[in-house]
Image (cartoon, rainbow, N blue to C red; front, side):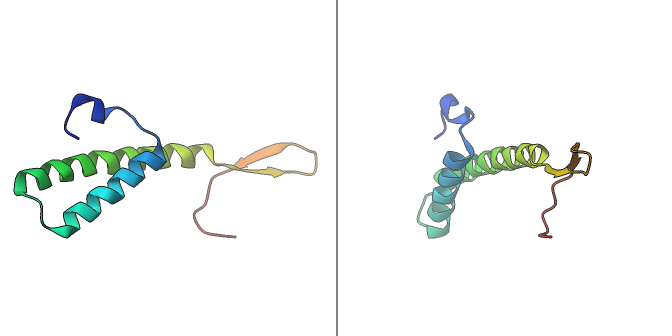
Length: 82
């Protein structure tokens, strides 16, 4: 949890699963203060990492619309459904 290896980049799903576990542990409220602070710090790092991965994915996700001439145009990703 607090070692240097825990700060290595893990994939999104692993980071999210660990973050969910941390949230449950913190919500339980039975941990000592120091352990809660360490988990909170790890959770912030994981949340930041997840956000960065989502932002990178959003940049990659572009709708490609084929025009009449067969050319492909990129259209920015929209969070709202069409």
